[in-house]
Image (cartoon, rainbow, N blue to C red; front, side, top):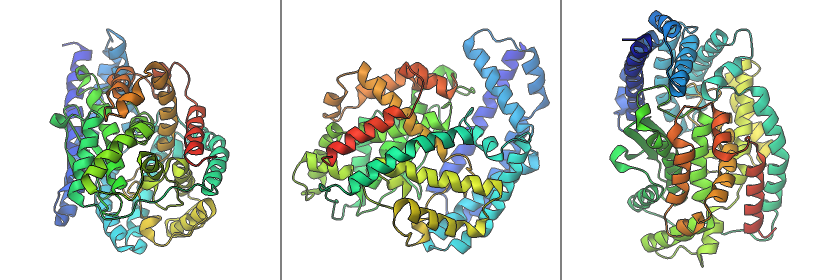
Length: 490
């Protein structure tokens, strides 16, 4: 065997073990007995010890030094393996295992605190997680910015400076649009009623099928915080159900379908390799957001969904499909990020971005986090947070150590805006198909131009190749202004 083939055989098993670790996480958030939390934390910690040892195996450096890449794909694989090796080698095995164990445990503590609206129950554990993440950042940063070291795990090449500059450019137009919409004379009605769980889930499955989700390689379950998990031939999605808010279930499902269809769409020849999964969380989020918003909340698709929901639930109290479309896209000063309208969603991310940067830098202590959140939320959104589950406890990310993850949501929105512009120019019949509940013209374009490549290209390069231009926030902001000015008669 050549050095390259030996390295790829070794990497195959590492990728397989990582998928097993993901499956343990999926199980914990969906069907695991509540009493098994401590045991699962030990299991995940032990598996992370094995994974860390493989990712830092000294043979990798030797193989990389001797390996010759026969083509572009192989060269990219070597580059990604080398990047992983260099990053993981800086993190002590003790730290990697303790982070895995603690964040598994923390997830359950967070869920209990959120259900009880008890911040004090969660803060001591969060302080421990934060301390370990700071230690990890210090190991990776080379005396640079600690936050950048963590962000690089989710969006290689991005920085707090570049993200902050993007947010600064976006904020004025978003705030101006939000203020105009909330002050408009025309205001869509809210959906009112009780919508049974089983029927919601049935419609959610219909929508997932409409967007091309392959049920032979996936499944739908419920979780406190919706997520997708896995890859290759086993990519699973979750949703949550609120019986007074069916849009929560339906659009959470479509969102996670976007993530999962990216994984399902990757060239099968890349399975169990470093390019066999999404290239970054920003690109991953572009798929979930374009499925959910530019396609799923479009007038043609909501017209089709209006008929499905009317058939399932009876009279919705809305006169026609146009009123339903306005209700689906209704802008309100809500508290929950995952339920936010498109206009305000990125303002939620900006809040989290600033707070987590302050936490990592040591400028904000965990015990002051709730007050800082509530003060900032009141300033940004004009309403006071009524309880922790609608404020600082609403997201699972910090509980599981995902510091640096939040800005990739907005980057995903920006990428989705670019992709939507390019896709609609290339495929003019998209809306006619969406009106029939068929998203395949759009999803086929996304699969061909982005999804099938997996991690083959760097994030910004991937978007540029798909769109034909360098990514910028302008298409997203233009789309939002055109859409919501139309809905609100501005």
